[in-house]
Length: 69
Image (cartoon, rainbow, N blue to C red; front, side, top):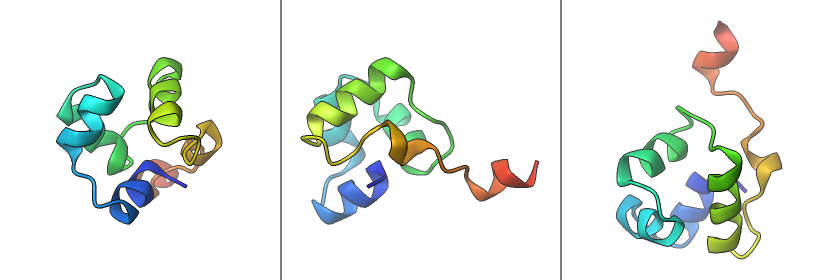
């Protein structure tokens, strides 16, 4: 499950997730919108925050703009 799907399913906003994973709201927004992929440390925080619902495998898919390049 991608972070965006998790957030929608649990009615979470960027600020709430940012506080939970110890990152900025802007970083969460970029990850949620698939503009960037999280680094390993951030992935670990996301996995812990989501109780394993989101893992590194969920961030492998390229955004359509990346795939076009």
